[in-house]
Image 1: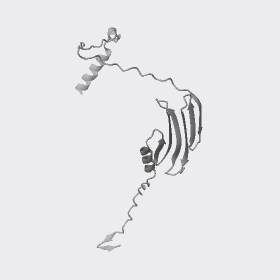
Image 2 (image 1 turned 45 degrees about the vertical axis):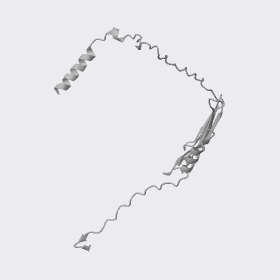
Image 3 (image 1 turned 180 degrees about the horizontal axis):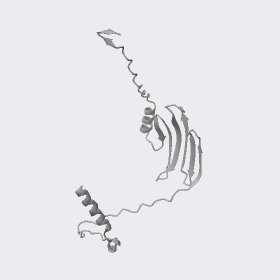
Image 4 (image 1 turned 60 degrees about the vertical axis):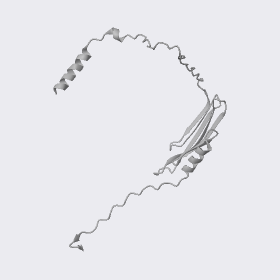
Length: 170
């Protein structure tokens, strides 16, 4: 208890101490470097990355249902686009889920158009497009077609046994 009181007193004393205004001013900090060595070339500084300006949206749309289904799209000034729609499967059941289909497109750094189509549901995400390897698309599709693992049934409660007296059922 004594240590706690000492700690609280020390903390209160530190909080009550006046603030030195000179400590609050910020001054440029000089970077300390080793003197240059004649046989080591200076480091090469990477060029600054030039970022493209934001792309404006030319058109867009959204429709939503109260049950969770939706449909949206947008198209950018640079020719990029995305569209996606979802419907509810098995509404109101334990197996309720969204079934989503969509696609998107953009132009890569080389000016080539990249187009991806996809499906997604409770079985997984399956993409295919000109920048996705066939092995990935095939594996995703194969995985989505695997048989479902049966949900484990809750074990039934054992039936109560009648009492036994002297080895005889009562």
